Image (tube, rainbow, N blue to C red):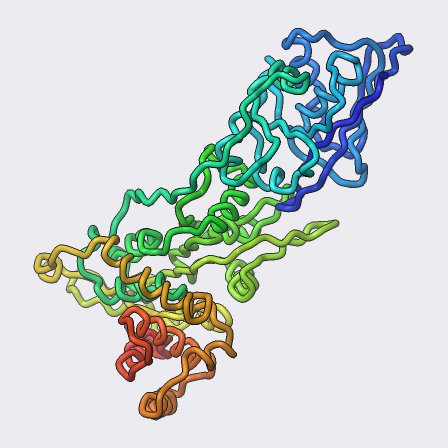
Length: 500
Ligand SMILES: [Zn+2]
């Protein structure tokens, strides 16, 4: 027999495409030659050299004749080096150098020396493997794969071992690891002195999954505060760990271990739309997807490009982002907590009276700057909070700050209450659910009505205020939303005035 076939798969975005790798050897051909057909890109074409060297350097000898490798289906573009291992095995089988009747599923890049190397996207691919086949994967992908139960799956670090395994030698199967979140952050809220209002706002944000916009002059601690937000967010669930690990695996950003801490992404304001939402030549996931299950921090938010801010609408609304390419479109998960930060004006010092800094902006410049965060994006921010300049006297009189662990305890209690009541955090409630779960008593209703009229609140703002008030009540462990909870929530609304 001079024909063989094994199974493999490639990623298109985050979508898994199953591939049949077929090898045919024409032994009658005098010329020793081979080709790969079936829409492989450059990295697949380069596979030829790697596979040839790996076979030779593993001591198997290059089969004689004309070798044809077919990657089916032929109409799907195949990217990446992960087809090296299945191609090499298919060739060795067709050449009669391996004896096996089993069904094999293989992924792995080959080194010229015959080593099997780590690939990108192992977890998403293996989650969709056909269970009837025995799988062979790179040893260096073992840790990410141990997140889930992988029956019939074996890890190897060389082509020689892959051949031994296929010929029946016993290898230990990949065992499922016990999932534990790594809660060792190198930052902590105990390091942030002062800024009690902003810290309170972030505690509410973490408890209820509410987006926040912080406004304050340079050096007031906005970035410092945002960076510490993941330390007070609930631990990731097993489902979230798998989702995030799949994303980082596909993006080639996994250092071997699974993602067990909530991601914190802080793209620079000069970032392109493609790098934020995803796309480009290889349909890579963007920052909004890398931030899935975690925090997307946009410092200097008004400085981001108009279309970047516009592109945030879909993920903020639907928790997913759709990236269109020439022939196809990809949908990626993108549910993140958005934390924006901005200066009060372009120069940064509007409203600061410390005798040293002075705002040099005109009133119209200040208005124009602040208008950049308006409309649909402002609509999606639930909490607006000022982070004022701290002067020396205030700084010197500050007490020791509360550690993240203490804040997290309150957050966790509030999260538990929310899940028992509605199955989700308050920030994710739909308009209909807000009516049901954020209902007010008569006195509270009267207070809220009067406030809404006096302040001229829009329907959108009223809904956000109710959600935030619900979280404030949950943090206090109270079943009913009180006027005090409503009053605090109203403090976090977007104020039309430009002054801080
Ligand atoms: Zn200014």
